[in-house]
Length: 139
Image (cartoon, rainbow, N blue to C red; front, side, top):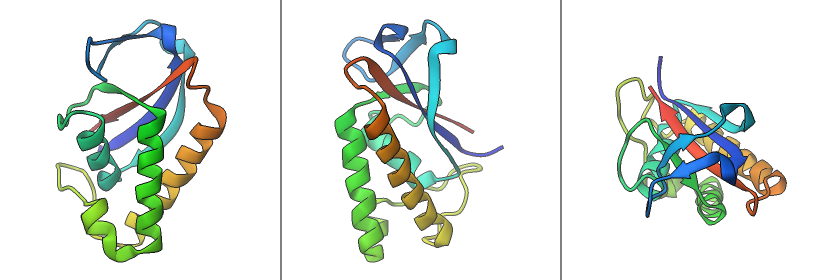
């Protein structure tokens, strides 16, 4: 058990979203949902999604993530990789039940590098005109 986080892509017509919200109320068909990113116990990345995508609601629900938000997260990750002293300010860790370490250590920075790779892959391979990218976490 622990904090597991994923990004999925799916066709826009496969998603029903709540009005005026990024929250997804339902997938019509899980068979056409593709996982495009996965983290385990990267609580600092999860914390960013909670505050920037999930309207400060830390719930195990599904949220649409715009291309612009992914670019924003990538930019923040690149800044932190270039200046590790900004880590606690720009991508703070968050304590939680089974959320993993809150230290700014090798694993923390590895997860940031992994996030950049995940986002690059999404930006290069997902057609945002036809697909949504959604975030889901569980613990």
